[in-house]
Amino acid sequence: MLRKNSDKRHLFGTDGIRGLVNTEPMTSHTALALGAALTYLLRTERVSGRKPKVVVGKDTRLSGDMLLAAVASGVMSQGGDVFEADTLPTPGLANLTASTRADAGIVISASHNPYEDNGIKIFDGQGYKLPDEIEVKLEELMTCASINKEMLPEPHAVGRTFPVRDAVGRYVVSLKNTFPKNLSLEGLTIVLDCANGAAYKSAPSVFEELGATCHVLAANPDGFNINLNTGALHPEVAAQKVRETGADLGVALDGDADRAIFIDAQGKVVDGDQIMFICASHLKKKGQLLRDSMVATIMSNMALEIALKEDGIFLFRAPVGDRYVAELLRKKGLNFGGEKSGHLIFLDHATTGDGTLAALQTLSVMKESGASLAELAGQVKPFPQVLINVRVAKPSEVENHPQVGLLLEEYKQKLGDKGRLILRPSGTEPVVRVMMEGEDEKEISFLAQECAQRVSSFLRLKL
Image (cartoon, rainbow, N blue to C red; front, side):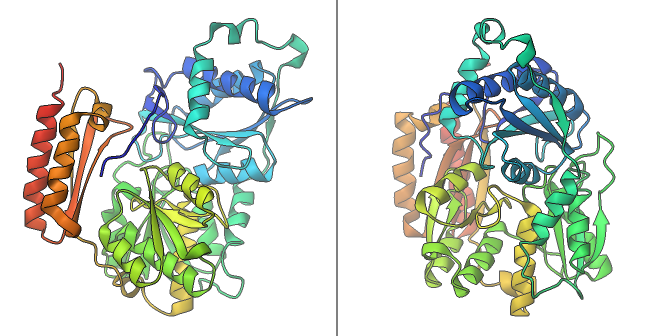
């Protein structure tokens, strides 16, 4: 299977703009231009008779202050008012954008990347990430020289900055309200790894206020230690703490807390596909899974699809990226989906992936069923899966290369209905990702290596 993509974007990837700080595109100049372009678009096409209202926030990395100031300046230069939430998880910013009835939201974050990187993500007034076509329009405006000259408003019409009071507290309350009123977390012990990221205040408050005993890790950000040997990229840290303390489970968030990795009471990492099955099956039993269907991406394991089918649940597949999952959920009229990487979207409660929310919903299943996380996860046995990154000059060429099409057909015949092959260009690196899965790990490892070598020969890296 090959993901089709007619993308005309150059700055935006699968999740906003991201890169090394003070290197294009992640510079103050680009941030200012983006803030101005977004506000010009709002002022001329979305808002009539008033100033656009834009909520801004950031995670804990060092460059957040610099880039937030730049993007806010761009917003105000085009006549928009900035409502500053300071440090807040990405899903918290999305929630705040919608609840304050803002016209857009901007969060400065590079998610799970190291502190040297940063990024910019944009939400519309409802808290949803922007579609590709709007991002293309923003890029066009950012390169339009006249936006900083002829298109500027008069001096009396520039914007101002207003603080958002207690943004973290408001987000904590919204999260707690998603947990069943008849339940509490009393009696549960949780290891919570905050990755020294944006949820270092909100996540511990949520679980402790609902009654859990928490062993909190990596909740002392200093601008440099976000995601450093901790969090969702290093679940072994939380796993070790689970084993040491005898906790009931572990939850490891990433830097902007839009996803979570789970660890059972034995210290074993639980696959994201297993978590999605746990939640989808529980929602269906309660009659709350719309159309008895859910959305995952092309990277989710075949075992998830098989288990869902046996449970009477249909699986739709979206391209990689939680915003594509959200788009397909809305298009199909569904309310639950996610990615095996830990982005889970509960549209009844949120508009984007939220690691803390995902943990709360998973904990509610444990509480209502009386089962441990390991018992619930055991309902899905993932097929072996091999992922290889192939460095090439132009990853997007994999989508239309004639020999690649023939290659896909060849491996489809080899794998039959007991395996899958996915070839897709990375949205953040100069690589093509080769993913193969099947019942026989030895066989698919050999075939995946063979396929990767052939892809490399088709799309040689040009020095």
